[in-house]
Length: 443
Image 1 (cartoon, rainbow, N blue to C red):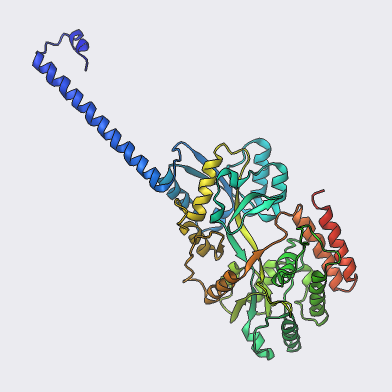
Image 2: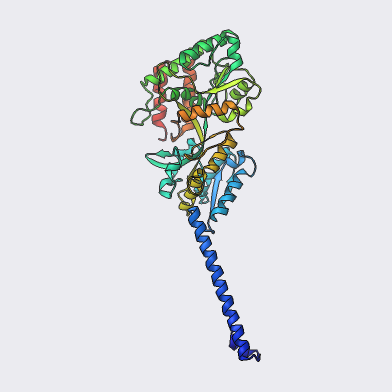
């Protein structure tokens, strides 16, 4: 309280009293300054400790489908912990996978797009063409924390957080009943095993060529090809199916299974979910499906392994995969902060803590794209743990990621593959047609 104010109020205070009040006031101010200084120092120390200088008034919007598939509140807890450590709030905009793309494209059109968006591989090229995505590495994403970053024309736009790999599942009881002593590891062994299984009156190999969701061409057909180093592309990275000897041999291998009656009945209408359910019910010896479906197979004796390879193939196998992946919108006003959150998902605050990624992986029966995550799969089925070791010895690949109009192209390729297997077109026509679809994609 100032002296002139005191005098205005007519207070008669002795000089000593005034001095004492003044000294007390000065003392209070110094104590307050000291407290503020200590608080600032502690805050700065914490910022230095976490490697974050994030502003507490920043809110990042995160559009995704993950929260709809994770246990309730799981993703919220990750975001709450991040806010506690950095002061940055992450607001979750959650929708089912089927509605997420619509939400993103609508947001891009009306200017309400989220800062961080989850991206399916089939959407990548379209989003880049729309100008939706920014260069994640320029924004500050640490590429050393990610085993893979999705790129278009050399620019990194999307970072996978989780990978959902596609092993081959084997019903061991069916093999035993058919007299197949070991799990096949080569195409010849697979064909011979399927013939014995078919002769024993059992269904052998499931190839889903339904077109409601035409992913059998990717997960099963090309999954088998990638396992043997067979590619849809040439050495320059351009799609090249016409006169592709590797693809021809792959198609001919499946034609042999079809001609032997070894493919699961109704392949032309078989969808992935139905195929997985049939395997879970013990109706098929071999199927290729996501490792995340393994928990459904509680009533059968099964193994999970890499897909058999071409007889003369000796290298590492490519493993088909899908991902939970994220990008940063071009219109995001806090790109650096968005990049920090992605880094946090991969490697924590300090780039050494992969617990967020590891926890997500273990929860979703997936594998981390983080280079520092060490997931605990001790509660997972033994088959999952064994397959994870095979996964780490090989590499993931999906050449449909980044392909313009990928869903339409896969549908057309699927229809032609069915026609080829039924003997209505020859191999040259099949591969030429595919080349036409790939060349026209995005035009």
